Amino acid sequence: MLPGDEQILLRKLLFHFRDARHVAVYNSNSSRQAELPMGYLTFDWLLGFSAEDAVSLTAPYFESLDQLFREQPDYYLGYLGYDLKNELEKLESRHPDRLDFPPVLFFRPQLLIVCSGGQLKVLRDETGSAWDQSLIEQLPDIPSGDFQAVQMQCRTERSAYLKQVENIRQAIADGTVYELNYCLEWYNAQADVDPVVLYQRINQLSPTPFSGYLQSDGKYLICGSPERFFAKYQQTLFSQPIKGTRKRSSNPAEDQLLKKGLEEDEKEKAENVMIVDLVRNDFARSCVPGSVKVPELMQVYSFPTVHQMISTVTGTLRPEVSMVQALRNAFPMGSMTGAPKVKAMELIDALEDSRRSLYAGGFGYLSPEGHCDFNVVIRSILYNQHNRYLSFQTGGAITYDSVPALEWEECQLKAETMRKALSGDW
Image 1 (cartoon, helix red, strand yellow):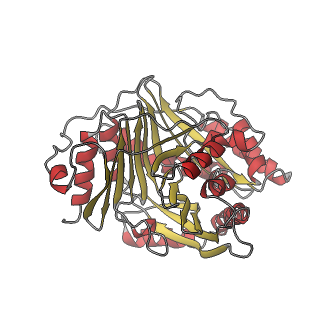
Image 2: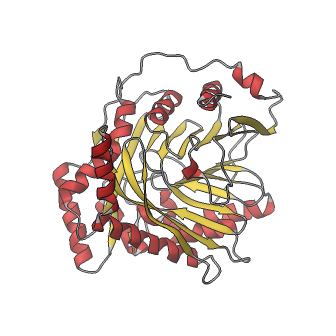
């Protein structure tokens, strides 16, 4: 298979299953950043399909998912929405739920196909169609055609955003929090889009290592995430929080200066270290004492539109702690809350103008061997086809040293890929 052919085959499968009840895709875009240190989960992409009901989970959802996996270990594909925070702490979400996504959703795939190193392997096929590479190659590709542009509106005015950043800085000065992730929503309440085509546009514009796509009963996640929230392989846990962003430049010399500027920025490094400490604390709740390590600290990676500062935290899971319990202990991810986590989440709900829903949650899967991998749902478009509501959010970490106008510009930079994908031409 030639380089790039694996993405063509994925595109054909997505087009074939565009009307299916449940489809989930985890797409590394052949990036080595998506690999775990021992080389596990090195696939180019993984696709699962099901025409059956999603698995039945009831509140409290983490306990329900834990019981399901203990009793029926299998592949489960789906997500954990940010608002699950409300069952973990005495928290609430005061904004209306315009997207109307379930707080948590997983399905068991009837068909599961993995592409690794350019080779396809059917891990499960209960469809009766005898899927193999030859059959997939014969599928029609997505037809070319016009894309209807979607005009997006920001729910928060720039002046209101600047004021709230000053309020956060005051809360930091008062000792209420040390850092807080503050986000904005762009939306269209009457959107008509083709989610499969939109995902292809997002992934071509920004082929990130934790890209993904989910369709479930008319609800869609179109995800270009660069960030891993939580992975488990054997007894080792992994998290790779991102804090620190710079734009890219088409001029190589200027681009290197921008990257070097991020590497040396004391404010960005302080943000990153604070979240690393938070993740270390979350892992300590589940891991063998003394096993939590930081093998990679403040490494700058380059993506098509931005440079990002990323760290890696690992730990050895205690034998008596289950995989889902460890997920619960780390949720939601510190890079999307702040520190201390509970107080930061209280302030987030008070200051932001939208419910986060699936945004800032985790999209991933569990495997029957007891492995899992979840991204952070950022750089993502959420779409409810039934009520035509389409939304994406962006944000950043606010510290006392934050300059409100620059934080506003960072939010605009992070929105660039989604806005361009939703535009009429690019």
